[in-house]
Image (cartoon, rainbow, N blue to C red; front, side, top):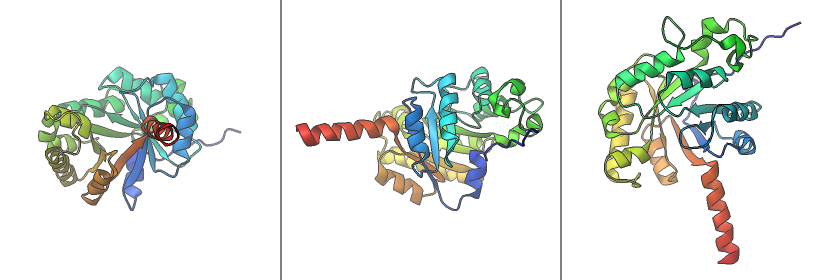
Length: 259
């Protein structure tokens, strides 16, 4: 007899039910082992990066399977605002998407349309053949797919900061994530993510997003900066990455034993 298959809660639902900010890390290596280590670390969420890494569709599917056994919530950053790619990532079972480089409310609306089926969106219908519905095993998937998917858009430019309130107000945007690295670059401060002017811009986004009733998060590998953001209203943060942690640890060993 077939058994009932249910999908995990979306990131948006997990955020809504949380009584504290959610803390996570990146997986950029594409390694299922690294993903499993992150998954069983005790961190709340793991971001699989499809923008600045070699992680593509098939690798993403394998990483999601590696994380599925653990209570952490996976999110996938797609390479760009591309309707076709977004459809493919959704169909392979990515429930929680982060779309980078969103500068305007119109781009945010395009992202929303890409994750919704018609008539509310433009997502192509192929779920019966895909992992998203567990190949049809999730009962009534098409009718409730929207509830199983969450959309986070990334603000990472001066233009986006100016438009933050309008971006956050778009119906279907569940959360906004701030990327200080590209933001600093757009402000003429390449590599200066903790510069006071950059921090002020990040915090202005926090204010705009929270005023719109949405959740806001940020990337902060500088842990003092991360705590500052948590103290000033971040609902979710990323505080490290698999490749960064391995680099730091291996170079530390070289320094300790080889001088």
